[in-house]
Each structure stands twice: as structure tokens, then as C-alpha cells.
Image (cartoon, rainbow, N blue to C red; front, side):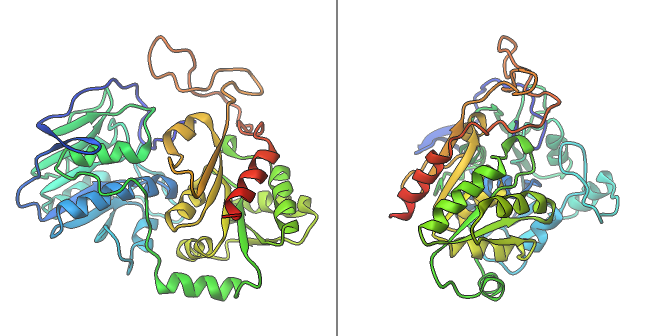
Length: 386
């Protein structure tokens, strides 16, 4: 159930260094003088990246003249091309353990060669906003920046400025505390993603102009334990279609079977959209929806970041780490299942030695199947009513 893409080592709280109490979120360190180039490591998937957007905005506000370079994945490079926002450019990090997996068409690359080339970029500041640091802190140290900062689990190498990585903390706040180490206090806690004219044009071309208000359902998730059963999504589709909404069911090509199951079980006309939109087009699609209902996965966080109201189905541990704290436009609904429905193992992460649970088991059945349909429908109708 862990959401961190770096190692999920145990962690203890530890004070940061050289901090002054001058922010609504707590201490803020001194800015790095004459920082013209800033590297930020965050090479994760979509939802993970959405969580770091407020930290990037804080960096932009604190270092308005600096170039912020995201050390990310190939999808980051494609997505941020010609897009306004806090990222100026993307440097693709090669696949490496605890950093990111290789894409299907990606050629192997040597991490040592990447670091040698990255040192030529002459970064003034390098930030690790990727995870506990066991795998990522050596990369940050290898960039040759004047100052390194970020997160550190108990068994990870230290950086020049660091705070302890603690598993149960909201992801947005985690990264805001990390950038505060280098003098970047929070300017917002709400992730916001800019759309482009191309995004909106693509959504119009694929979806056409709406003849009635649209809602979107996203029944997929990479981790099958975070998937609410398709027949439950189908019940929501029936209810909202009966209320007069056009219902879209979105998914990636890998989620085609799940989308098909929702469409088949709905028993009413719904509109599947599987692989028909780019990431930018999907963002514009959600921005035009009256509501998005989704599992806890990247598209749910994308929808929130472009201003769509959301109902999210969460496992309780992930709700603590990732659900928006806002309730005017968002309703996260929690499953309280902590033991595997198959073997009964406690799957809450074992953060401290005295706490039971190893955080994992071999089964990948849904941990959120106990979320009642009526709770999701009522939350959806409440938001749709304004």
C-alpha cells in the first residue's frame, strides 16, 4: 500500500538544520545565495508528481530568476513541453532501482554517465523530493551542486540540509517542508496544473461539445488493491445517468478490461474513453466535467489539480497521505480494511519495530471493496448540487 516510489524505510523525526520559525507551515531555512540553476528529483508517476506542485511553486516564488530543472521521467519531458508552470525544463533520469522503471521502448542508459553529464549543468542547488533517499540521495549528491537538500529516511545518506522522511505524512506537506529547508516557504497547499490551448482543443475534438453536463468515472488504478469493483462504478454510472448527466468512463489501454466491465454492467448508455486522449487532453476533459469519481490514482489527483470536483475512493492509509484536505469541492471516502481479505495479514506499513504488520502480502485483491455505493452516490449528488 506504500505510495512512496523510493525505498519505504522506517523513519524517525529529526530536526532540520539552520531553520528560523517564519512560515505558516513552520520553520524556513536560509535561501541559497546566487542560485541560478536548481535541480529537483521527482521521477514518479502522475499522481506522485501532482503532490509536488505546491513545492515547485514555493521554489519559483523564492527563486524567481532561477531555472528549475526537473529530474524526471520521459513523460514529464513530453508533458511540460510548451506548458507554463514552475518547471522550466526536464532532464530525464535513466531507469534505476528505487528511482523509476524502464519504459517499454526505452533504451538502457548508465546512471554514472548521466551523473557525469548532469555535473556539467553546474547546478547551484539540488533537491531530493522523491522519497526516503536510500536510492535517491546518492544521485542528488552525485550532481555536484553547491547545496543539497531534501528528505532522509533513517538508513539513507545525509544531504547538506535534510528532514526526516516519515511515512504517514500528507505528501504535499512533506515536500513543502523539504523546500522550506532552502528558504522557500509555502505559497499554497493546493496543487494546480495549467492547461494549454492544445489541451482544450484536443478534448473538444475527441469529445465534442457537451449537450448536457458531464461526469467522468475512472475505475482503474495501477495497484489492484486500490480498485473499487467495476460493478460498484457501474451502479454509480446508472445513478448519475438517471440524474441526467452524460457519463464518461476513462482509462488507459492497460485498463481496457476494467472499463469494459463498467460499461457492460451499467446497463445504461455510458461513453468509454480508453486511450483516446493524451495526458493534456485528459486534463482538459476533466476540467470540463461537473464531477470526477475515481479510485485513488493519478487521474483523480489530475482532476483536482485542474479544478474539477472529485469523489475519491481511498484505502485509509493512502487517504492520510494523499487525500485533499478540502471538502467544499472534494469528498474522499475511506475503506478501513487493513488486513488482506484473502490471508488476513495486517498490511499497514510496519513503520516502527513495535508496530505489527509487514506492509505487504502476495495477494492483490481489492482493499476498498467495502466502500458502500450509496456513500459515493450521495457524495456525488451533494457536490453536483453545488
